[in-house]
Image: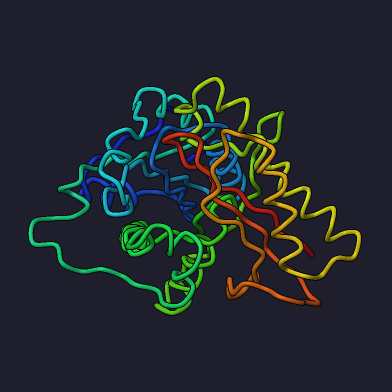
Length: 283
């Protein structure tokens, strides 16, 4: 397939299997929850360059939301999503129902251990079990050679790679760079829910990460000093309410004290009811 014709839309597991049985290989999978933006488009475009068939899934997964209100408010626009997927080069779009993803009597979950405990795992109990379960289902159904994930969800990327390795899943997990707005804000489906005032304030996340990077590049190797640099920058923005700031090992996500090698600085910050995350690898 080439993306030159309109993507085929399938809505059930059976339809997906039928579509994939006839699809040229290799297959590139781009899992999404919809509300697609240019960050998603970059994943689809990379999959297009590297695969004969590009499969995108659009499914707002209830099992990875900690707050029912957050799940209900999550933006949904199938028509817009299909247009973007088409223009970016998708061949097949899977848009299943909750009942199709989780059939009657569903009782199997996939749990990864220590990597899921800090940061997002501590802030959102059960979140990663929802993520790894749905991704395991997607990887199993797609049987794709490659699956593409953005680096904005750095912890999620580590967790999914760990799961794929541990379970012997043959799909290569491909990490793709964060796509940012001109003012530095990482593209996210949640950005559309920001008030104008919060949207103007939100680039402080990037500014805080760059403050940590500047200290690192100047030779600072004390984890708490880098965390303090981020907190100080966030404190300059009254609308920013940090949930956590982190300077951790990029392999284990354990918080660092004095360190010699690379690090991952990250944060979660609320602007009213909207929670945003971002990160910056330091090496």
